[in-house]
Image 1 (cartoon, rainbow, N blue to C red):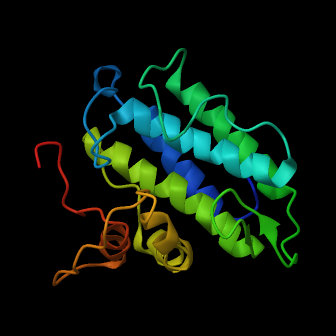
Image 2 (cartoon, helix red, strand yellow):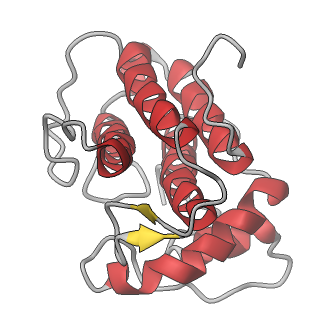
Image 3 (cartoon, one colour):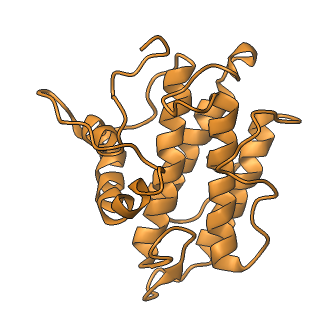
Amino acid sequence: MSDHTTSGWDVLDASHEALRRVVGAVPATAWHLPTPCSAWDVTQVLQHAAGDQIGFAAAITGEPGPAFNPFEPSGELEGDPAAFTEDALARSARAWAGVDQGAVEVPTPVPPHKMSPWSGSAACALDAAVHAWDIAVATGQASPLTPDLARPLLKVAQEIVEPLRAWGAYAAVLEPEPGDDDVAALLRYLGRDPRWTPSA
């Protein structure tokens, strides 16, 4: 991890590493497989995730946002997916590294558009980590989410997700089931089936 730009925010750095690791392990033949984001394939989920990281960086620094619409990903990616991912993660990490952890608030691209630094960094982390999970389960990889990571992500999800559901950014909450752990609780809150498989 020392070879990569880090933000100094533990939850965000862990989430970036999850996305980085999952993208690096996607087989060359798997980029157009279906994902839990039913309208998008693996490439589109990656484009969306990378665009959102750039969007968070732009909100903080005032630099240009993504050169494409993260909510209308093309599904066509030129060049190396790992390099594409790394560029977005590095921009996000550099931006967050410059945020004063004692600040009252920081600008964000998602409502309410200003959050405490912890909540903002965790919201950015939520996006990276959950899309890492989407790509992992779509391509036959182990889940990159751990209970230790899921707990703070659920905390921030409960702060920000409800207004976003109305825009279609998240599906409706799924009912909990016996035996759910912290990871399953997070995924169900975000409208994802923890047992999702490509054939489901």
